[in-house]
Amino acid sequence: MTLNDGFDRTVSVWLDEQAGRGAPGYLDEILTRTTRTRQRPAWSSLERWLPVQTTLRLAPVPRIAWLLVVLAVIVALGVAVLAVGSRRNLPAPFGLARNGALVYGAADGDIYALDPVTGKSTAIIAGPTIDASPTYSRDGSRLAFLRGRATADNSGQTLMVANADGSDVRALTEPLVNFGWFKWSPDGSRLALVDHETVRILDVDGTTAPTVLNIPAERMWWRPDGREVVFQDPRGLYAIRVDGTGLRTIVANANITGAGAPALSPDGTEIAYTTAFSGGVVIHIVNVDTRQDRTPLFDGTTGVDGWANWSPDGTRLVFQRLIANCAAPCSTQFVVGLATGGSVVETGPTMPPGSDNDIFYEFSPDGSKIIARFGPDSSTWILEASGGPGERLSAADGPPTNTGNDFASWQRLAR
Amino acid sequence: MQQELVEQARRGDHDAFAALAGAAIFRLDAAARLILRDPDQAKDAVQETLVRAWRDLPTLRSPDRFDAWLHRLLYRACIDEARRLRRHRFDVELTPIDAPAIDDTTSSMVDRDQLERGFSRLEPEARALIVLHHYLDLPLPEVAIALGIPLGTAKSRLHRALQAMRAALDADARLRSELPEGRLA
Image 1 (cartoon, helix red, strand yellow):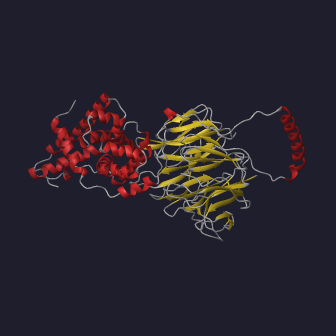
Image 2: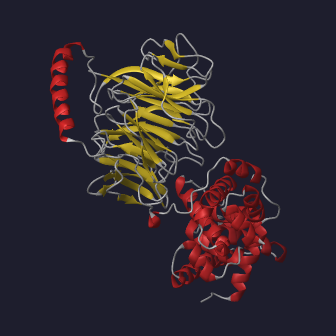
Image 3: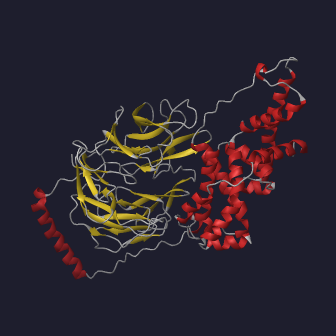
């Protein structure tokens, strides 16, 4: 079935002319990237799941031991009743909370807490070691961070934990290999580590053996009950219980664009993710349990709305929107709207082309602001969720707040 | 020789992969530029293709299918790149008053411009079909594999894509023939 051989030949000759001669000059750049990229194991295919390995062992418990346990619980409850008045009031792991400090890893290798109101920065973990990527637990009482200098394949750093004031620093792991990211459990008792081949779940207090899930996750999120996690791999979004059972597909879609991570809603029921289609980009919201998928339509859309993150009460999204009627390459804008779609407000400056490398943004714990990092200098901004130009963050006292590859973690406090 | 390099690269030999990448990069880059019509996007697509190829190579079941698999990765990377950011082009339509003078020495240049216009108007998927078959000289069965579609579908889509290009050329030819004699640019 050909038009005519003459035209086919014309097209071939023309394509050959258009292609030109000479190899492109970026092969070395590619090979530098690939030397830092770990190969996937041959078995890592959803069609060939290996049995999930767990190192958690449950031994039979004698009856007398159960009686002692019951007695201990009764005593503990009595102590708790007496002690409750002296305990610090902690926020619930999800939902609105009060804004606390912003913690970040600075270029000097120390960890600082910044008061966003006064702009004062205080070093809370300092010394000769290189410390980075601090993240508060959901209740704001503890920090997890990475110590050491990472090699080209993200190996060599140790996961550390400390109190929120920087005291009681201790190592939780050995030096990690090909490390991806980590995530606090909702109750702050565990940390999950992702390294593209496994998800390791560690007890922060070290009282139980770690659980290892053999899944090639790139990112993962805890559901609020702490019993199930949602994860992303190159083929889509999935869920699995932390004991390794109940693997299920939420979205089987390899076209989920990775420019911004999918985001699990605070109540753990929905995921906002982004796909690309001919001519544009769209936000999806899928129910984790029913798999019902919807695409909210936002007023004034230019056809490129994507990479949404949730407000802490789960009612709004902050996302990126391409500027309309532009000549390529286009600028982008942060936009806030209801998760059901409809009207939106713009917040923050228009980001010129190229600003979206290394971009990161999320709502403050009280939902009134958005902290964002973007731009060629990776500057950090505080934007108003209700709209407006926003404000570039600067420390009135202390080191510059350009945190490079780090991103500030906002502490959640009880309201 | 290539199969041996693929086997070595699958086992983590990065030098072997570098040799494979070096041998492939010119045609990948050229194909991506033809499909995407933008050298920066093409570079991104080729980078994505080769990084994925290195990362996923151990999962390739048949090393002798390396080229077909690589072309599939390139196709996906190009389509993803084309969709990632919408480009707004301002195509300049030649009006009769702007058309160049028609004489024998300029006809080949006009044909190339017309081919360019006809080709650029196609969707990226259609351009990819034409590039894989008419530039990379892949047989249609292999094109179908690269695109992940049945052979019959690949044939009909290719036919429609070439028809669309031809229609654009015919339209321009009719426009030229309507020019009053003596009108120059």
